[in-house]
Image (cartoon, rainbow, N blue to C red; front, side, top):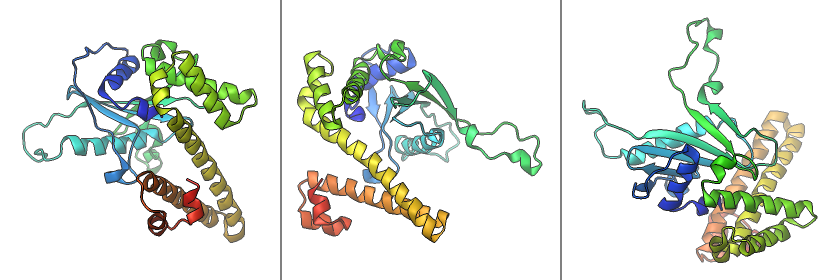
Length: 291
């Protein structure tokens, strides 16, 4: 839902104005460079866009903070550069200018988190001083990611500058609020969609994509549940076969099934026959039919 909201140049320009605290003129060109898993398989990100050929911005959305985001964004940025400088003369003597990079994570999880925090690539490096290299105190490579808490009521100065970001935060807050009142997740999402339509919050988006929002959010939460279940299965296998070996096996099995489900869902949405989806993914007809 987040990436769908910010899928056009105008909304991305507004988003960057809010995150960067700037006011870019509306005629500054914005081109989308987001990586998709069609070409890059497992390497794909939420949002990447280039502004005026001078600045490239990578934005990730997370409900759980991943301490490895700086490393992930380094890999994403390298892939984005491959796209933007493809075919140019990397080995020529002349300087090849590349866009200035900025990295953001937008957090809206349930756990307490500060308004902002910075994750650094250098925090992940091994300690070279343990090899007796006492002069190795500062790495040659660094990357900083600004994490911004976008939960309702947090970072109002940022969120209020982008209508879609404010609307998204309000929508998620309403879903959680209805859940606390005792509604199921599905009921909470439906109530939140109706509330937003009635109060002019992402109204046009909700009217067009209301049922799709429900499917997207339920699917996302189900994937989280699936990962949690598979991790527990891995732990059970670990107790019988040796903890590490069993855990790795269970995690691999879970990730393979999640990938198969995602591929099957896309094939089904594209109208492919169930028999073909079964053969391609190895899933049962029941599993495909339930998607």
